[in-house]
Image 1 (spheres, one colour):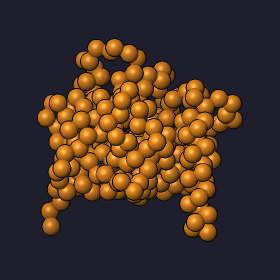
Image 2 (cartoon, one colour):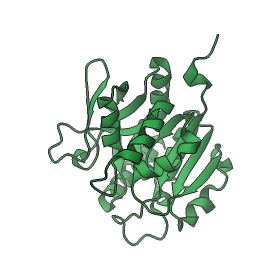
Image 3 (cartoon, helix red, strand yellow):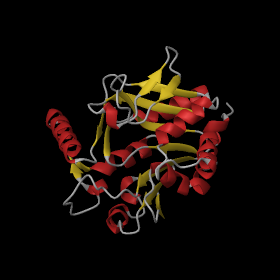
Image 4 (tube, one colour):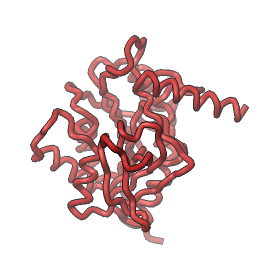
Length: 255
């Protein structure tokens, strides 16, 4: 049976890890290496990318995050090749992703944030499967969170199409936010072009708003809603504590 165009594309994971972690003071290491349950927090993302079929992972880091390179090395221990790109100025997640554009432009991209806990663990595998089956442009995993006003609530129609992506709304319409994403080369190109021509009201161009721009431009954006899942931003003191409680509970239950 002939493979479709998305199946012929390589699959690359992109991990934006250049943030300065100003919300987590007094750390002895990069926030991506903080222990949460039986893993360091970023390991959950790297392993989920591997399990979703990533052939390599691009990790975008700040120049002084040597501990990430020391820990992950070639990626051999985690079962997926890992390469590193240096973002000299941490101007946000969208710019970090775009830094890897030469390596992403012809690939199916798996994206997640390395200081978060996402459930279910196979969210990336499921969004990739839907992207390939529907031949759409972007698929978002959506799950409940306790802090929708700090994250990206998503409005979805009955068919599963995304009609709106918000960014840190003052009055969130609900608690369902996007957690991880998978997209085609078309969106990688769109992101690159938007960052090149879009006037910056602020230093950071939120990725959720670029998703929204893509919807406005006619992109086919779908979602899988995991109502029994969860999303925890562990980049704050309270979020890290919540993530540690969750994973400790899951480890105890499995034991």
